[in-house]
Image (cartoon, rainbow, N blue to C red):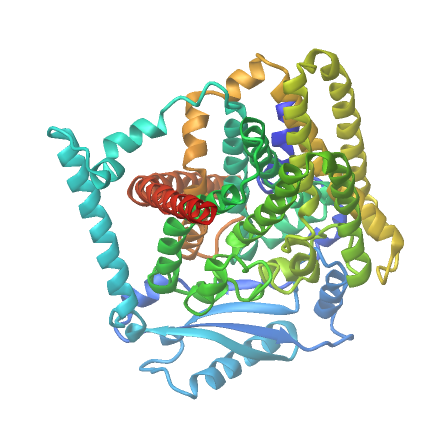
Length: 626
């Protein structure tokens, strides 16, 4: 059963690793075409010439219907899954072509003239060229900024505090909060600590597997944007007949996390309501503050790194391909609005999920607050959540006139989807992802109700049948994506697209919630034992740090990899393995030095603050009573 869960997220990785070997358009492979990417070796240029000048330019061809090469290109241009073959990307060591050259305002014209003549001589086609970026010796001699010094200072302070606290703890120990919080020994003990007896540890195991899957997929996606020798092999896989099914599985993998988050949060709140029936609004304030205490410290440190040192790590011929805007737009991340604001110029692009998750947490808190205050409305609230879960995605698809699911367009992929309306208006916003979170909360309500009434033995067979039906429905709806490219349906206010897209997205949230619910009620099973393994439990505890540090590691690796490279299983294995290893190491260090200690200190402060507020409230009531 868990294989079905994991495979949906791994499908894109399998595709990119070469599992798909057939081609939808076999004639395109043999078409005679110019290379899209040609790069002189940047590092050789830098070593060979003291005053080197290296530039990356993009040449766009002008149409010529009488030219045989252009006929092949225009044939491929009709298929949006292919690369834009009318654009050539060239990395030039200008010192190889012009001795004694220096970088000045005439350099772009010199490059344009050189490439214009070369392209016309080779292919008989006219072109115009844009220089994307140039590098010289001075590009690597820039002085450190205040922000970079501050990051180094902060990192040294954290390291020094951690080392000192660990040394004190090993030499007699201390009851001081800072020593206990920053001690590596104590934090490692917490990392391997067994879960509470009344917890559902398999959910942490599920989160660990989901995070690992996302990390693998994200480690391979930048390959699409890399200069490749064999672009035709990547096109071959993108044009495979079942690629839309693969793409749908990858696109909707995020619903796994929203559903899981809704269920975990719902169970936590509903258990509290059972123990303390008396309504207290401060409970949700406490929940919010503790969530922010956990999220913000490590997040702020990574954002600071991205705004300062990241530009140095990525410096080189691929620098312009992996732009990050933390220096300008950091505030939208810290306010958790980055899935609505600056979506085309994001800071830490993968972190849009954190913004959506916090927003859904606030919506879920409001709904559960109503359940706690007025328990009798729970049934009506469940009906409302189901209605919204199905209505909202379809409404956005209809009003925005977008596709029912994310389709693969190579031009959008090369721009990191920042030019793709479906990604910006449907994939990122929290209101279009609300179905998964709502289904998670509904599953939590059913779970607590079934456990409190001890009706699991009676209801489990029925829930398993519902799970089987939902999985069949989910597979059928996703398999239908294979037919979508052949259906000429106008997406302008399309009721068909709205209905299909709504059911497609909701099927993932519904399927995940039923799966989690069945596993929670099953009691002991081999699957639950595997998911509750201590290794997965420990990985789940650092999963947040893994998620926020992955962008920095993955893009840092890709921007420093020799280019052009060969697209294939070996290079994917090397890059993915390196990304996994370095990300986990960095995440562990971030957890031990930042997240774990500051969460302990922050939670202590929250407890003290809310305790004082409660004391003041009691004193005020007592005074009024007198």
